[in-house]
Image 1 (cartoon, rainbow, N blue to C red):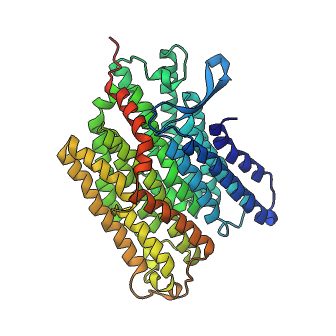
Image 2: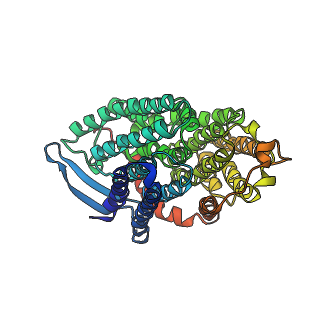
Image 3: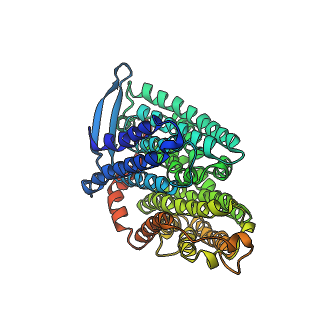
Length: 492
């Protein structure tokens, strides 16, 4: 079994083992098995980085075998500079989520941990798949464990949120399936992405396919105006569910644009780039303003995720090395920062059982160590230089200015809005005198919580101070992607 198969199936195997456990009387052993499984899955992904040939745009660690022979569907895996960091991010965040839920989850612990491990393997499958049907299977299968995580361990309106999440994402994906079948027929019966990149497609066909893929990927990102499911889901999801949803699942949609829309449909991508840039700017500016008026901490961070992901789609559609690389860096940095923000909110919620900003005030007086971490993550969410939140946004803004000054100026305004809503929340929650007896009775983070916060803080600072290892890996693959985008696929 190859490294990519191990990365996919190791967490799924451990997740399946956990589901075999019954009552919560075995919860202690379940937690340790989950941690071992998550660490093993992370360890398997490390050789993907250490053995990765930097400077090559070719797919590496390739595995290919026949899956459904009749329809020429293959179990075809590979990784390049675009997907490598997303795989490592998925494995890392899974470990964080398992540790974060160690004491918080007390019912159906085996199902909770098992769902996260299975979800981790499926998401790595999405980032590894080089066969379109295999991609689709993994892409859709991720809905099942996340639906259960929201629906079982969520808040009072968890069923509504889980159903809304499932319905939005499933309906969009059905149009993608139609697009995949059309491309399969046009390619003479192949689901290989490499074959689809060479297809000559008529202008009208490219446009229809572009919007079919848009329906699936824009909902997942989510782009404005199909973002309305995200705040509801974040508010109701358990803390670990929110962390994984923001850190990784939103990236599935952005990754889809890179693997399907841009290289297969370059003419349509250029034709509709103005629309994509416009929608991205609305997300960056308008949704940032919406975040400012939120009274629920989770809802505020959920809207900020929509705004930050607007930089990702903006970077894709300025069609430059700097823009696409910046967008991918933004995907990774947002994974660290958003997970940290949601897990920090979870620390407070576990103690006070409220996400309302008005329930807090002066937390720094009773939880000084935790407040220091929260300040770092808040600054990263603002895009402070020296943190991960700055690097990708700055690269995208520079690329946007080079493409069109006014687009770059509008995008840069998001740094002001980001600082406004992030610092306003921090001021009201953490600064000043203790607001009430609940805050006065708070205890600072324990060793387990400190470990979670410290690991995320190291990631946020390392990427902010020294992003070169990240960009060195992705640059050749980005250049190869843009080579596909620059070549017209219209038939002669």
